Length: 312
Ligand code: PBE
Image 1: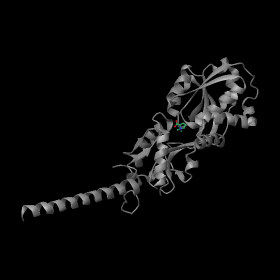
Image 2: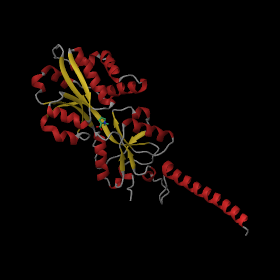
Image 3: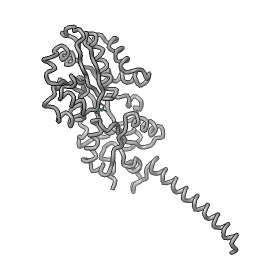
Image 4: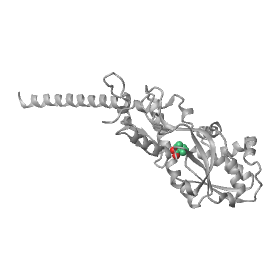
């Protein structure tokens, strides 16, 4: 074979090999990230398809801590990890996955608008009850707050509402993009009958300051927003400071803040609460029927955390 011909043939071969490899690469990627490879029964391996990764939210959230515990406890989650970034980033990944009908496992909860945006989702069964059953959102105060500010304490203690109320405000904020505090204040105007029950027997005050601490999620922006507006009608001067969950509990224990409406129990914030419970007053639930867990789109043909596969 002369040199020219050899060069020509190897060029063609090179191109062919490159095309072949690129083709394989594509195919493999398609199988992994879009539909998952299939196991010996011909079923889709969702665990491999999602790269053994749960899409989570902020590292400081209770549900992030709980998900680390789930990964420890479930055999089916051995070798998995949870991608922690932000609620917004998780919602974007969820939107993309659902648009393309790709598998995804997220940390989900109610009250939130994620189920209004994507009604075709389900909580995975949790036989080990790592995420618990029903959660309640509690109000809590620093020690001595009741004695020092009985009117404020009473109003916070009497504050209670339900999942539908909270979600109504959350949806509106999400849909309109308007400031959730303004929507909450409007809700207080529109629901005088509800609000009057919270201030029953509470004397009007003149500028008594109340420092609420809260967490950076819309659920708690909604509750703090409505109670702030309702308390200001009675003459209180209410500030709301958003901090990490751990700091909510710590600042109540040290007395740096007066109260919070943001404590999810018995599971979500258990670790934080247990650390500080001797120095904090639990004022009881302001909302019942909340929930946390692992959530997947309906088109994924699994029902339980135990239907996932470890990364061996
Ligand atoms: N959440 C919403 C929070 C509490 C409110 C469930 C994302 C969490 O700490 O996990």
